[in-house]
Length: 67
Image (cartoon, rainbow, N blue to C red):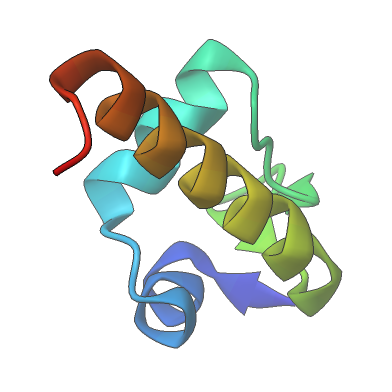
């Protein structure tokens, strides 16, 4: 399991965005430590994160137009 900072560095997605994805419910941590409340992510979540990023980019292109 990776803490949010480690997962952020591995995936090159900011901690702020990972927290946002958790808040809106599209990428919840695999676990949350009950004592420290640290978010813990699994490498198995990387494909889901990549799909979220892909869809976000496609939506942005659709809204703003593609050159």
